[in-house]
Image (tube, rainbow, N blue to C red; front, side, top):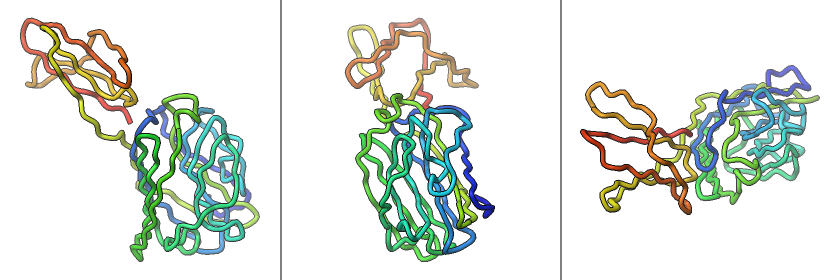
Length: 244
């Protein structure tokens, strides 16, 4: 928000990403200082790549569906703090993250989010005072979205009380995981978590390699993605392309 009043804005990664597990981080700054409204959300949604919700207390999020969001509320009468939102509905109360004062000053706040195994670990750190707050939220993000992929980004708004809020240093990555291999007869079976957004690539040489999609049969067995490699003439190398 740019201090104009009664505005709603959003920004999204252009392509949908896998939301079964991910790590995200960003810095939130209320550059106009304490006393503003209304806040922002870190949002995952499947409505549209240019979606934006209602202004003011809607945080730019209200009306987005299907969606989930971690809201940062800065309007003091509604309690400065955070809340997990779903279905495009902004609900109260918000919960303080003291000693971090979101909305209580103009100090940049580093936010780190890690989602894996149905748990969202969230850490908030005041980059000036080093005050830190950490919490874990048990949430089913793919279930709420009805999909294992979504557009990821931010919404924000001000209302009758204005504010200038910015997001910087945003990064997004998939959670690391191991690719396993085992020999079955004369074949090689490669496997990795099925919840991960990953694609198997192959190349015949590691000297100036050109990686192509592996054409061997892909299947899901239980919670594993598996590819069975039959014996080939000559060398062949494999790697996973991980999509966050």
